[in-house]
Length: 620
Ligand code: SF4
Image (cartoon, rainbow, N blue to C red):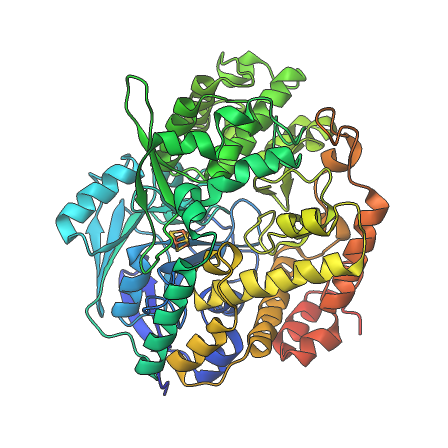
């Protein structure tokens, strides 16, 4: 049916009945949703019973690739992991760079949908069309990196391996899925969903050709794109520091998350910035098919040699945001969270929240089994995470995420719980950055920069300006990053970091699939996906309000007390103006609910019907 690009196949695995089968999706699905998160949200919308507890066996765990995944084009070794999120209660997903992405394609599978639960710890071994459920008794309890080593030894270096750590097993709601020891994906608790199914790992091997419509054209485009990346004037700098290059920039611009996003500058930034990181770097790793690899493997320099992969997000959240200024300790913290399978960003957020709650006497040592914790104490941070793993006393609430823990402590704590829709904010302080705040507020899975990283643009455009241009930029980024890259599925960094021309992507998609694409056609798909994701949230929550698209009170009500931007804070009126424009441009009403006319224009008639059936009033 398909000329190339799509295999058309979905693998359904029912762990309750220990059965699996393949089905074919139709051209309508391919054209309307492209792949990756588009397929994931469509399947969740169609097949997940509304109101399902995310940690119940009936929840669906989805792995999805796109029509460009695994092809010989830049940075195409990524897959999307999606599910109803146990952290937010809404749609959750994340992408991960892994050989598993390429192996899914070689096994001729575009989507894997896992339902049910095995009674004993198990892992899946998928080889082309066959699926085996294997005993993981001896793997249960091990670190994600240990499991990777064992499975790699058994299945070979080319096997695609996805694992969870103890955090996933214990259903900590911000547990991620790990791959190749250092790569994490699925911040909104995709690791916990995997753990709830008693699934420790998924191993994939495939031997088939990935179907391509016009092989010659695709190869030529790939060769040119790789060449463009290498000849970027930023290439050398990028290869030195990767995303860590932004650390000092953030500090200089007062947007480095510091002390639980209380400040935007860190007095010890020069001890943990990119220039320091390079002195610890011992190796560089990357995702498949990437020629601008950004995995900076660093080794601590003290007695106990520990290696971890550093990037801006995990370093900022586990250094300035919790007051740690020793690179050795940062490396150890990152190794710890990756081994345990915690999302590093959420870990930095929950530790900072706990320290602040302790400081404000909202919790005491007794609540944390005698643990006293303060800014900069990396060892206590690890002890705290260990308590969270055991769900001891108040740590049981911390295991549910910063939103729930704050609600438990009351109104004062809610003000400094730094999340949107339950998902902790990633590493950009927004006291001075209203467009970036809007990006966090409207990100489709909760606060994440992955869909609209507009902060460097906003710095040049002017942090002070409040106008429609800013909103248009956020939506443009969401279409490109959250819509295009997450459906193709390929990495966004060649474009955003090294300026690879966006026009390559529709051309490559056309060459792969034989279907004529331009950027506008892809953006139409992106808008459909954003509306469907929003509809999914509304269906699960039964309502929607502007507050759910608004970042935490701290950025509005507690001005910065340090640095060149001392006194700065967000303004509610200005933010609401941006949000008004955002809803208007998206065709959503002033409560953030897609209008009937918008849903019908993009063909989501079924969404209209189902939302109205549960009593959601849709504006025209
Ligand atoms: Fe992976 Fe980094 Fe390459 Fe993107 S740029 S594909 S994240 S190694």
